[in-house]
Length: 324
Figure 1 (cartoon, helix red, strand yellow):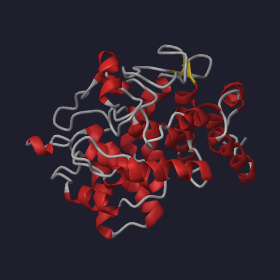
Figure 2: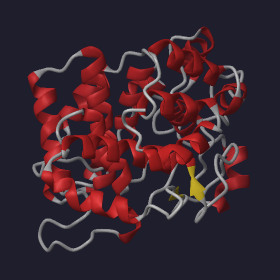
Figure 3: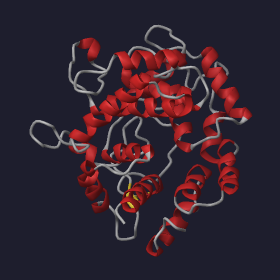
Figure 4: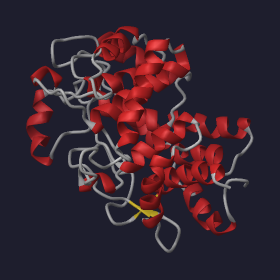
């Protein structure tokens, strides 16, 4: 248990008393189990629990809820008053990615192939893994295509050409925006990093990623560069799933995933993360984003969250190891 302090052991036991999608990540990131033990637990995600339930919900048309970004019209008309629905193909694949379902398993490969062959974007009928026009969507397409072994080269090329002067990206560019968005930028950065690791990164890609990271770091993950004010108080609350939304924990998870020594400009965000730890060692679920979901993963806002606790603990492990 080299990364887990004695006082964390009860929390780790609580995390392990959960779905395979959480258990295998705890084993990999916190308790440092042998690789074969982690792999065996990970293999369960596609066969049982939340991962298997999501795979079971894939339609014969290769989609979830009949659509790419939004459910088919007949479903959407029923659920639209609940907020943005999270039951279509894009958010469902995001969940499977976050669960860490093994993309090499036969069942998952078949599911991804069905999406590739049959799912089309509502925007103009583009194939799912070809992306569409919004970089906040296309960043996630790159993450998912890379993860599920689909060709997203064209989407990456498009994103590299859409980076703004300040270093980030914004879905509102086609409407005239020249300033970047934290939410769009984090979605693109996650995609570019995944692609770089799986496929290899050109000098242009690496430079673009680093410029995007600098955009967020210059703002200390949540402040305006011009005034130092907090951009959006909602970003200080930790939700899961994040869907397309930005928050400080999502940004910290991204910088942790790079594996570099923490930049000093994340220090204030780390202080925020520490301040949210409860007396029992857990972190709460906060700011759940409204909308129809397949099924609940946790007990609701203001309750202890296994997902946020797992994510927070591995961020702190990364940060504290560098500051020993």
